[in-house]
Image 1: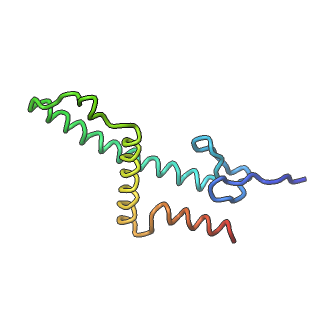
Image 2 (image 1 turned 180 degrees about the horizontal axis):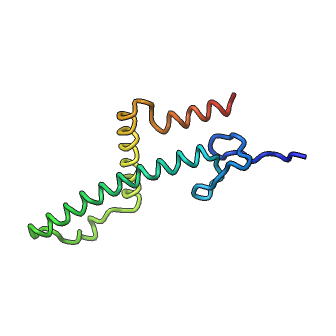
Length: 117
């Protein structure tokens, strides 16, 4: 008596006992590995940006040019989101250039095409 098999929320494939949660999303192990790999890559890029930022702050301190921005110059949350999205886009382009296998959106389109067939 087999009940309906749970399916991956990303690729739609039946998971059976080979499933995991990523950010509270039910996915197959392949999609989980992909998501954690993407997250790790983004984390490495962010760590690199932190090093650059730290160096820029250090340079500003050494030269006496480090001050809090005026309130009117503060970055709005929506602008911060735009910056993060731009960084993710840059990372995707960088990954595509290194791997020559397409970016994340190519993989998503392929998965969507597989679901339709």
